[in-house]
Image (cartoon, rainbow, N blue to C red; front, side, top):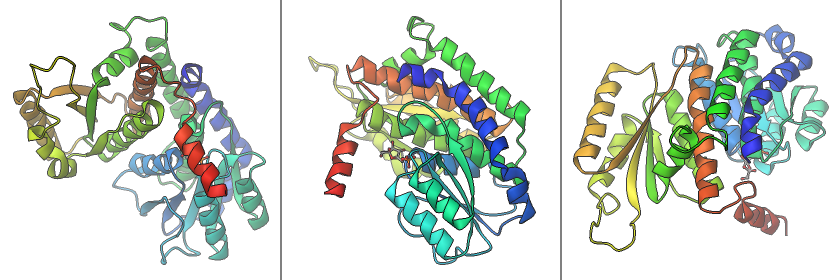
Length: 348
Ligand SMILES: O=P(O)(O)OC[C@H]1O[C@](O)(CO)[C@@H](O)[C@@H]1O
């Protein structure tokens, strides 16, 4: 998995070329701006949909929705753009949603593996298709899926994105890969340091903006898949209403007399440069209240201007933290046997 993480920058560049070759610029722009953008996908593909909405931001003139199950909402129709995203191009939920979008006459863009069933759906419908190309398991292909989504949004003027932006994102990911390289020692390697902070804890991961809240979700998802570690996640201020009680709960209590280390709560705060002032105040206070109670805190700050660049500075690092944690536990993070078992049982 470490070589796969190191290829994130290459994923961005390859995806940029795939988008150029797929002709989505002209194809999408010709039909004008849709009433709504609906991203259909599950797992990392759905997170790419959430990231798209966060990158376009609250000022976007159309609503965004990520659908992560088998049914499109009743209102989705011909005026809407449905983007079906699946790294493998073979995921039941996403194929069901893509076929439903075709039946309803929605505009469809499909993003997935070349030669996959998803491409076949797109071809039959005469819809646009962007092939994704990346090594490793599906969840590691986030950038290969996200770049086409952001490019599609840029084509219909819902955000700004060009080659220079993708190159800046690739540069950020390269820099993280260098700092997190296996040969770099824990005290200067932010990926290894993060893994050490997360080890033997129950992480409660809070984002301070819609953008970093998706990064929080990404870390929780990766910890579950890579390292088998459960984690809570959410966005400040809402998450405080739901999860602040844990600061006084059993996981927050440190038993200093215990012979072995007990699993304890850790608050992980993912800061954005673009925070609502009231969120900043709540973030600072929550952090202080956690520290007052002896709850360990990790704070990470997104960097950069464009939201895509900012998310790269967080997700790039978080992915390394999760993989190093798995390796520290002696777990090979590439396969997720329990997911494969579920898929086999479903196919019986
Ligand atoms: O992007 P795909 O291929 O549709 O996969 C969706 C999700 O299914 C899994 O492969 C298994 O749950 C995830 O790792 C992945 O994010």
